[in-house]
Image 1 (cartoon, rainbow, N blue to C red):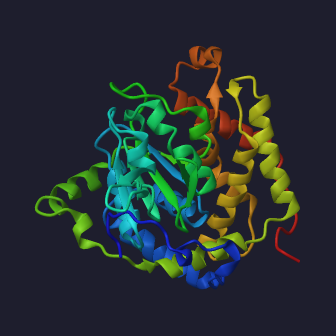
Image 2: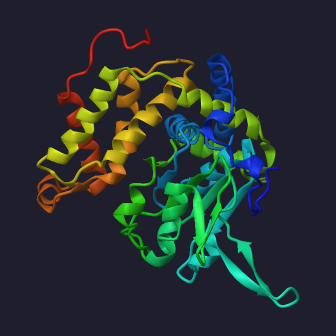
Length: 346
C-alpha cells in the first residue's frame, strides 16, 4: 500500500530486530540494484546520491537532502518512497505548521465522553519532510523523539511508530530567505546528508523531453515490498565489522573533535551511525563484511552535517561551510592510518 496516508501501527508492524530473517546477500544486492534503477529512472545522473539514500534506508537511519531549490530534492525523496511498497506520508513544513500536525493530538470525543488520539503525519514507514527548515524551531523539535526513539509521546501517553521508520527531509541552504537553521541536536539525528547538485548538460536536455507531458513519478511502481525491506535491513545489521574497522571509524570521528578548524566535531552517535551505514553499504554490494573503503565512501555524507567549522577557518579559506567541511573530512581521511590485514569474519 504505497499511499500518502497516516496510521497508528498495529502490533504486527512494530517488529523487534530479531523477528525478521536476514535476506541472502545476493538477493540484497539484486533488490538494491532494482530500487536504484527505479529511482534513477526519475533522477538521472545522480548515482552517488541515490546509492547513499538507499544505504541510509537499509541502515534504518534518517536522510537529510540539502540543496538549492529546483534540483530534485523532493523528487528523489518521493521516488525512493514509491520504490518501496509501504506506508508513506508527506509533511510540507511551513512557518505556521504546529508540532501537533507532526506528532498528533488528543481530541475529546463528545459522544463517548473520552479523549481519542488522532495520529500525526509521522505515523508511516517513510516520512517525507519537505523544506524542513522553513518550519519554526519548535515544530522542528517535534521530530526529535520520533527520530531517536521511534515513538511519540502526547499528553503523557507514548505511541510506538511503525517498523521500519525513516525520515527523508529536504531543506534549502540556510542562506535562503525564510529558513531556520536546524538545531545541532536534530542534525545529529540524521544519519547522512546528501546534496543533489545541478544536472549535467546531457541530463538537463533529456529532462526537457521526459518531463514535458507527464511526471516520471507516475511511471514507477514499488519494486520491494515491506517484508523484503525488513529482510534487507536485517541482512545489513548482520554484516560483520572487524575490530580494526571499528577502531578506524572511531579514529576518524575523534580526529574531527581535535581538528583545529572545527568548533564542533562528531559525536559518539556519529561513530555509531558511520559503522551502521558502512554495514548497509557492504550489504548493498553483496558483502557480509565491512571494508575501510565503506567507511571512506560514507565519511563526508555521515559526518559533514554534524561538524561546525570555526569562524577563523571560514574566513581563512574563503569557502562556504559545506565545501570547507568536505575538505576537512577529506584531509582527515588522508591522515588517518587505514587498518591492514584480513577484515573478513573468521
